[in-house]
Image (cartoon, rainbow, N blue to C red; front, side, top):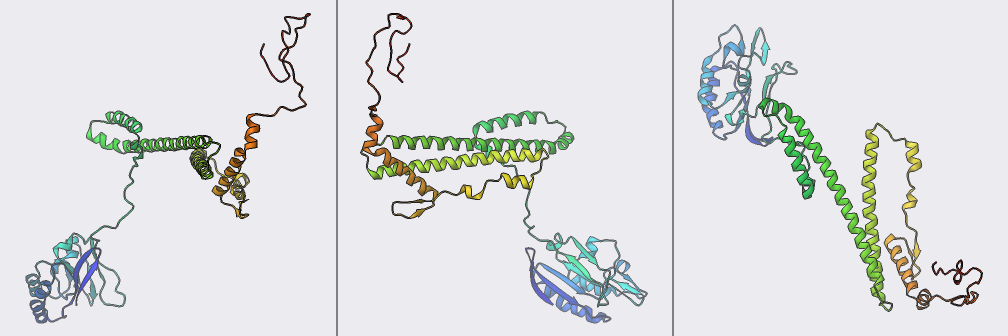
Length: 377
């Protein structure tokens, strides 16, 4: 039987062969007529089957009879490129695939072409017969392309984007490289520990880079919020409504972005504290964790009715509504007049600018001032 096969990245032909038992002429005739022709169909082949002859009687047969070496000679002449894989892997071992009636022989074998030999790590004869009078012969074919595994651990070098951290790491690395032994044997022994130190230092540098990046983002968000506030306060009194709404929306967006950056900064700091807490040997207590955890309802935003009497629960829309509400109040002319020129209550009496000095204490109280106004001493 001849069939094309594909497995483990290999494309080869698998040939299953059975040579007639007890008929040397029939075996040799089949080999002469068919083996060379089948080998010519493909350069990559595996042959397996019951050959009913042995190549090396001294190692592959235990019998009182004399083995016919003519069949082995015809086989080698017709298939010189095929190699017995069991004998290649076990040059002096004895194993028999058929044991019966006081004789034993290894007549079940696997052959393979040279281009597959390096991918065959094992070939063996089983111990049990099961439902057959022959023991199983097994061949293992390794994959041509190894399966993709997780791979080796690679040290991350995100901190190299920061020139200062990159320079600091270069100095640290130069100092530690200078401390490595010059002897090759000692260097190989010290190399694993050196790699662990380098990986730990890279991890520390990555953490510093992440902290700097978070702090820079937080500072940029604060600057953006201050700019948005300045733009809103710089609007004239008679500014158009779209300009005011745009400025208010910019303030709301800047505040939301600042809150997000601050939350990320707090989250990272909290995570580091928890890691240190766990590294000290502490363990969380479920009851305390449940009691201290903030309620889910606390994170919800209160709902407001907009000008169309629709309920709004989105946080950004609620913030924009409140900003516009207070902007409208601040733009009211009457309110601005009261804020700029506050009215003097009628119940407050009018005091003259100065009062006459007391003749008895001219140096103690040189001048009296109206209540609530400090004129200095």
